[in-house]
Length: 403
Image (cartoon, rainbow, N blue to C red; front, side):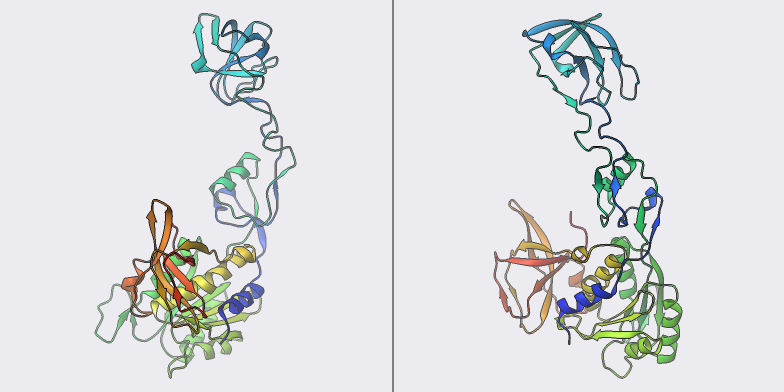
């Protein structure tokens, strides 16, 4: 068996970011930049008012109360440029360019306007309430580095500099194949010896929640020939395939043989972790990847978050260091382990006055979906640790977005 850290390093070594292309900004959320994004002009491009009020010369406002003559108005987006001379002011709205001659903006709440006369209460400093030209960035400055993931604020930055077609890595295409003659569709009636297929919908949801579109979702029986055919068909149009079930050493576990029959090279088979020990990883030419996940639902989900999702992120352009996020949180309750293998313990976040803590969720087995349904992720207990005491800081691996 390979150690989990070694297995992940091997996956990230072989998974290379997919080719980049220009993509409409509205369809780029979640994508990873394949180029730097620079300011196309100074930001702000001119001195601008930070609030509604009056643009003034600070030298005119020395006494506790000063009266100035109102000579015009500038709204946001207006090209008007009335000059503020001695003893005059200009009404200005938030975001409007500061007129020539003015060097400060007085808040509306500190004024009183009567006709064409404005009374200013109190002195004001030069530069007050003005967003200075290029105080955020100069033209040509790099605002977003290559390798940045585009979230809402990053999309807004691209929009602000006119980057309507950012160059991003192509999102990977993923397919799931669930094996097992005992599996039935979700809507089917099931007999005592049968199971509804929870792995397929669960893994499709995990991929979608992480921003990846599932290209195909198939079921296959415990039959080597048919499984090989399905695997070969799916491999033609996907960057990554994850199979569930049939990956151990039982009589009807055909996944490894099917993977090898289509020409894939098995990189490892068996990981020193619990749950998920039988996990398999193989590669095909042209940057294609196959994972065999155990059939028990919690084992399959552990394999997805520990290996499949990091591979997807790497293919999508993420740096290797960002492919598997880890939070370090204080334990609200003790965690025990038998040691020997890296153990993943179901856990949930609890919120208190001092912030978030993590507590273990009791689980009976790797098939215990009832416990899985109330978990937010897992605590990683190192192989050489048997007790993590309450109050200790533990590694928490999130399985869903945290509030």
